[in-house]
Image (tube, rainbow, N blue to C red):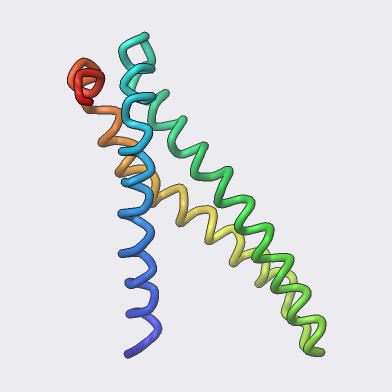
Amino acid sequence: MGLDQGEDEESVFLTPRRQLGVLVRQRDLGRRRALGADRPTIITLVVTRTLIAATLGALAGTAAAVVITTSSGVRAPTGFIGAVAVLALLTAAIDAIPPAAIAAYRDPVAVLRTP
Protein backbone atom coordinates (compact mmCIF):
# COMPACT_ATOMS: atom_id res chain seq x y z
CA MET A 1 0.00 0.00 0.00
CA GLY A 2 1.87 3.03 -1.27
CA LEU A 3 1.16 6.68 -1.75
CA ASP A 4 -0.19 6.07 -5.22
CA GLN A 5 -3.05 3.94 -3.92
CA GLY A 6 -4.24 6.70 -1.59
CA GLU A 7 -4.23 9.18 -4.44
CA ASP A 8 -6.24 6.75 -6.58
CA GLU A 9 -8.82 6.38 -3.83
CA GLU A 10 -9.24 10.16 -3.63
CA SER A 11 -9.61 10.40 -7.39
CA VAL A 12 -12.17 7.59 -7.41
CA PHE A 13 -14.16 9.51 -4.80
CA LEU A 14 -13.94 12.99 -6.34
CA THR A 15 -14.79 12.19 -9.94
CA PRO A 16 -18.20 10.60 -9.22
CA ARG A 17 -18.92 13.46 -6.83
CA ARG A 18 -18.31 16.01 -9.60
CA GLN A 19 -20.44 13.96 -11.98
CA LEU A 20 -23.20 13.90 -9.38
CA GLY A 21 -22.99 17.67 -9.08
CA VAL A 22 -23.42 18.01 -12.83
CA LEU A 23 -26.34 15.56 -12.82
CA VAL A 24 -28.06 17.53 -10.06
CA ARG A 25 -27.81 20.70 -12.14
CA GLN A 26 -28.65 18.87 -15.37
CA ARG A 27 -31.95 20.70 -15.88
CA ASP A 28 -30.30 24.07 -15.37
CA LEU A 29 -27.58 23.24 -17.89
CA GLY A 30 -30.16 21.83 -20.32
CA ARG A 31 -32.23 24.99 -19.98
CA ARG A 32 -29.16 27.08 -20.78
CA ARG A 33 -28.48 24.93 -23.86
CA ALA A 34 -32.11 25.25 -24.98
CA LEU A 35 -31.89 29.04 -24.62
CA GLY A 36 -28.84 29.19 -26.88
CA ALA A 37 -25.74 28.60 -24.77
CA ASP A 38 -23.14 26.79 -26.83
CA ARG A 39 -21.19 23.75 -25.62
CA PRO A 40 -17.95 25.58 -24.75
CA THR A 41 -19.96 27.98 -22.58
CA ILE A 42 -21.49 25.08 -20.62
CA ILE A 43 -18.06 23.49 -20.14
CA THR A 44 -16.59 26.81 -19.02
CA LEU A 45 -19.46 27.34 -16.58
CA VAL A 46 -19.02 23.93 -14.94
CA VAL A 47 -15.23 24.25 -14.73
CA THR A 48 -15.49 27.78 -13.33
CA ARG A 49 -17.94 26.70 -10.64
CA THR A 50 -15.59 23.86 -9.73
CA LEU A 51 -12.60 26.20 -9.60
CA ILE A 52 -14.40 28.61 -7.28
CA ALA A 53 -14.98 25.83 -4.76
CA ALA A 54 -11.45 24.47 -5.27
CA THR A 55 -9.96 27.92 -4.72
CA LEU A 56 -11.77 28.28 -1.41
CA GLY A 57 -10.55 24.82 -0.41
CA ALA A 58 -6.98 25.56 -1.49
CA LEU A 59 -6.98 28.82 0.47
CA ALA A 60 -8.31 27.09 3.58
CA GLY A 61 -5.81 24.26 3.18
CA THR A 62 -2.92 26.66 2.66
CA ALA A 63 -3.90 28.68 5.73
CA ALA A 64 -4.21 25.50 7.80
CA ALA A 65 -0.82 24.27 6.57
CA VAL A 66 0.85 27.54 7.51
CA VAL A 67 -0.76 27.60 10.97
CA ILE A 68 0.02 23.94 11.71
CA THR A 69 3.62 24.08 10.50
CA THR A 70 4.27 27.38 12.30
CA SER A 71 2.79 26.14 15.58
CA SER A 72 4.83 22.94 15.43
CA GLY A 73 8.05 24.88 14.98
CA VAL A 74 8.70 23.57 11.49
CA ARG A 75 8.42 26.03 8.67
CA ALA A 76 7.49 24.51 5.31
CA PRO A 77 8.90 26.33 2.29
CA THR A 78 6.44 28.91 0.99
CA GLY A 79 7.04 27.80 -2.58
CA PHE A 80 6.11 24.23 -1.71
CA ILE A 81 2.86 25.24 -0.04
CA GLY A 82 1.99 27.46 -3.01
CA ALA A 83 2.86 24.69 -5.48
CA VAL A 84 0.56 22.26 -3.66
CA ALA A 85 -2.28 24.80 -3.82
CA VAL A 86 -1.71 25.34 -7.56
CA LEU A 87 -1.58 21.58 -8.13
CA ALA A 88 -4.88 21.17 -6.27
CA LEU A 89 -6.51 23.81 -8.50
CA LEU A 90 -5.10 22.26 -11.65
CA THR A 91 -6.29 18.81 -10.61
CA ALA A 92 -9.78 20.13 -9.86
CA ALA A 93 -9.99 21.87 -13.25
CA ILE A 94 -8.87 18.78 -15.17
CA ASP A 95 -11.21 16.56 -13.13
CA ALA A 96 -14.18 18.83 -13.93
CA ILE A 97 -13.78 18.60 -17.71
CA PRO A 98 -15.26 15.09 -18.35
CA PRO A 99 -18.56 15.68 -16.49
CA ALA A 100 -18.78 19.14 -18.06
CA ALA A 101 -18.32 17.69 -21.53
CA ILE A 102 -20.95 15.04 -20.86
CA ALA A 103 -23.39 17.73 -19.74
CA ALA A 104 -22.58 19.94 -22.73
CA TYR A 105 -23.18 17.19 -25.28
CA ARG A 106 -26.51 15.95 -23.90
CA ASP A 107 -29.61 16.75 -25.88
CA PRO A 108 -31.24 19.72 -24.13
CA VAL A 109 -34.76 18.68 -25.11
CA ALA A 110 -34.29 15.20 -23.62
CA VAL A 111 -32.87 16.71 -20.44
CA LEU A 112 -35.82 19.06 -20.03
CA ARG A 113 -38.35 16.26 -20.58
CA THR A 114 -37.01 14.10 -17.75
CA PRO A 115 -38.89 14.52 -14.45
